[in-house]
Each structure stands twice: as structure tokens, then as C-alpha cells.
Length: 217
Image (cartoon, rainbow, N blue to C red; front, side):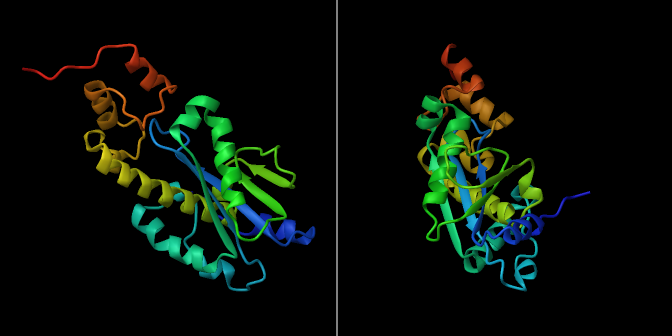
């Protein structure tokens, strides 16, 4: 059965006196190329029609690209504030994917035009922030704020990977968004890594130590 995000966790924090609760999520953590992108969304919990207005907002992985594209402007129009942050592939290589993801999340929160007083975060703890937070496994399937943030992050990153496809068309970034699909693996074997790849990720690193496949004469 598909889980549906709701506002239980937001209302529980509101009952504790927190008024501006930001949901935070990322996209691209497991990809082999491109940035990791984070979204942060503060919803107006005083709106009686909030759940109805955001009907259909859920974990971005459970939605089609067309559904995510249609929901993004609804989220932006409804939210009190929306922020986006990213960490590029060179930061991922230098820091590791978990610290880089935290950095992207912190940048998304810093981009909010309204400062949150509490956070709901999908998966990762954010101990560097002096804010109360709840790190939730599969939070994008539970919290409407996190689900909204997941859509913001996913659509933003997908659009970036589409633009990257124009720079490096031989890798098929528009189709697989940098994830390790058979198409991506074949392109890596044939062309080797490009500037967009995460060179410390094991499949890419393995290719660096081998010879690039040469086209048949």
C-alpha cells in the first residue's frame, strides 16, 4: 500500500509552540553524476484548506515527472517560503556524499526568506544547526512538508540534469539523470568520465583505473 504524506508531525510540533516548520529533503544522493540538490519548504499550517490544496503532494519517487512538474507551482504558490540548495560533484568528491548532502540542506534552509524555528528532515540528522529537528526515515512518505521539499529538490535537479545533457549529450543525462542505469554504464565504458561525474563513486572510480573502450574501426 502506498504511504500518503500528511500533516500529523507538523501539527504535533505546532502544539509545542513552533510556528514555522521547514520540511527538508534531497534528490540525487545516489547518482553517479551531477549535484545533490536539497529543498526546504515551510507550509502555512494555519490554512484550513492546506491538505486539500496540496492534494497529490507525496514522496517524489512515487510520482511521475508530469505529476511533479504540475505540483511544483502549487507548492511554490502555497508555501510560506521555499528554498533550494545544492552541493556540486567536486564537493561530493572532496567531502563525501553525506557531508555534502548536509551542506546542500543547510544551503536550502539559508535560502528561505522566512527563518524556520523547527525542522522535519528526511533521513539525515543536521547536528550543526542550532534548531530543533526531527530526522525521519522515509519522511517524504509521512510529512507533507518533507514531501513538498522532495518535489522541489527532484524537479530542480532533473531540470539541471536536462541542461547538463546539452553539454555532454553522449551520456544520456536527460534520460537517466545521472543514475547508474545500463545506458549510463555503457556510456561510461565507452567515453570515460566527464567533468560532471563523481570521481570518488565506486563505479566511476573503477573506470578511471581501466582503459577507455575504443570504438570498432
